[in-house]
Image 1 (spheres, rainbow, N blue to C red):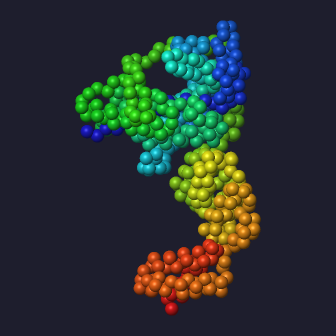
Image 2 (tube, helix red, strand yellow):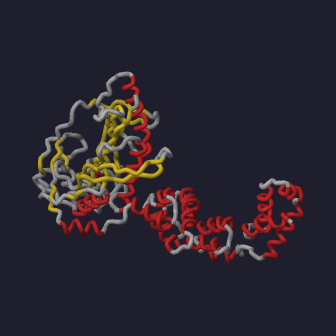
Length: 480
């Protein structure tokens, strides 16, 4: 029997604000435990919360980036449950009237496994805003609590169960992360707990219109882990169905070292959180003017930018996917390519030499010692035949090490390309005289022999000879 997966994701995303959502404590990561706290975020009796407007506006911006309907009227609710990381024994969240509903995220391109993902839209059921809980730290046989995270604004983005493969889930998370980066909503650093993901997956027969039994997977700390966990869990459920065994509704944890999911707890029914409206906070009225102001300040979406890059700069869809991976890189490329006569070559230099250098040095785009104008100038030197591509690679290495302009490096080191016919002719004659057997090989039909001779000319000229002129003139010389 043929089976298919049904996948939905719940993504928790910390909103990047100066202070927490209901108090003035700083929203920062990495401080000494329990130093960014006050009576409000510690849940002392008698204290009152006050809403952080920036958290509201950024959540609305996130909804707009995801093509959601934005509520004109919303409210906060109390979600009641008891856990050590909950200082009040309830969480201020949103239940029936979230800020954002009924959106979608477009996915497409090359998937994590290398397969092509056709363009399609993944539904976003809702985006609501709540306060994050404290962090539990387990030390040996006991646990301690750091309340610095308690009260940090947290969005929950709930997808529809529209994904059917680990590749689609990975693409959805990647696109979501890019959109949140572009709109300056969150840093989305999973290692710092700023982006957390729970996966819901079931398997059903292809001709079955209903859903299979849902399994939730937790302990996923990277997009790669999400992909691997889904791949394993889908196969596990398929094997159970093939053996006519039941798939139990349960929560499983992902063991990244062993590459398996294991039982965490059974889940027979949904929790009863006894939601009721938060009595200490007024409902939110989101005016049309406020919505319009937020919309005006939205950046171009990654998907829109990819399409525009393909059209304006004549690059491939794959190039555009790489170059829009982060906003800083997309900005860097666009500034370099916009005034260049060879934007495709600019793209190639950035994707190979530039990103390769950043990766080797462990640096970000913002930490680059040269700006986009240096890449544009380097490409221009190749385009107007001042230097060859071989020399350009050497110039690139030096400009990244020293921060010097490529034109200055070429001038200081005398790296200008040799185009003088008489000089090139002298190189050719010397190489032909020194390699008579290779010349005979070429004349007998061995095309590779010509490449060897061209290489010898380039070596003799220290890479300065114009390779096209060398190739053309050498063919003429050997055909006589």
